[in-house]
Length: 469
Image 1 (cartoon, rainbow, N blue to C red):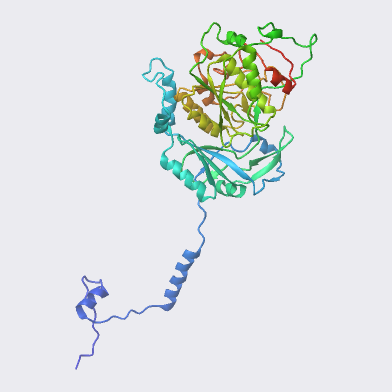
Image 2 (cartoon, rainbow, N blue to C red; image 1 turned 90 degrees about the vertical axis):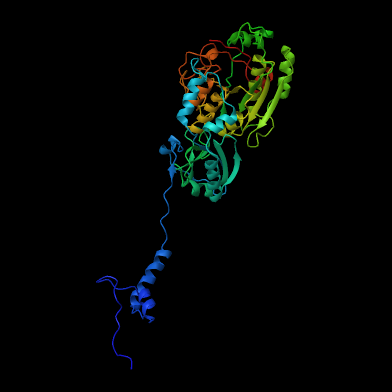
């Protein structure tokens, strides 16, 4: 008969029970564990609640500053931007080694530096200072994950274009896009009610396209002029009736030169919403009038370019082209046309590395290329400087006729040009005494001349005149 007694498992150490698995191995007996059913139920419910409880939304990784127009603080919204509207955004990624880029720009202009005038190629700039391919891809993934379309990318990886419905943009950037009555213009504008925040671990500079407070505009102005003898009369220049001719312009800026710009190219930036293109008949008439060689103009559309039809903006573009024809009759001209996306346009321009001179007579909100801070545009202008490209911006006609419009309240030598604009424009042959206008080719500091072609004058109701100071 088997003894009737309780078998207790032996301990490995005093006061420490032997594990059940070891006891089974030694005795071959089965062990029945006594448990509390209520305790098991409680643990099960607790675990289930942990899985089912909604997790708190992750805080946005970064917030970008400078995207809410200052005027918004004084305005009451008139509504919300329609959810079905689609927006075009240009997201600017931060460059790598910004301090190194700043130093390079100084060294490129220092005759004592080994880097003096050793400009970079586009590939070299991208390799040294462009965002990494991995970060660029992360930004693309962010766009697609938030229902936005990647509509444009660039080889230097500074700007990434995104498009999407207002609702998707608001959700991705944690903003609400509201409409307001413009305080200076007879129109409504839209803008975010708070600074954008992104759940993206890639350093960004800014996003253009979130508001339309400032629109592209021509920096030349129209002013009715009384006819002679009460009004101004043309000075004695060499063209018929004393009007200014190409030779007069060349003598004013580069007297005695025999250079014509042959073998070189000039790029012109043109925005607009009132007709696209230029008056080709005006260019041909200008060639014939002054015996200039046949001009070569190539249009580079950016983001679809402009609608090619007659409009008030065609006169501005014609004037810009004719100014290049006058100053460099042997050069080839490339016109970069955009509906109003400055950073997209600059990103396209920097890739045309064979063009060493760029110019524009367009501004946005009184500030060339941006009515709001535009750090992404600054970096692109710094890239131009690193690649040996110069950018010259017209200083506006505001000094000649003040005030003539809501955006023309900037006094002489006080236009708030961006830092990058100045860095890319500095050239010893174009220095001027204006602290903020240094290196700007135009009508601002020093001798100033206003000139219009005949067809453009007729279309704009401008009287022929020339004005010097």
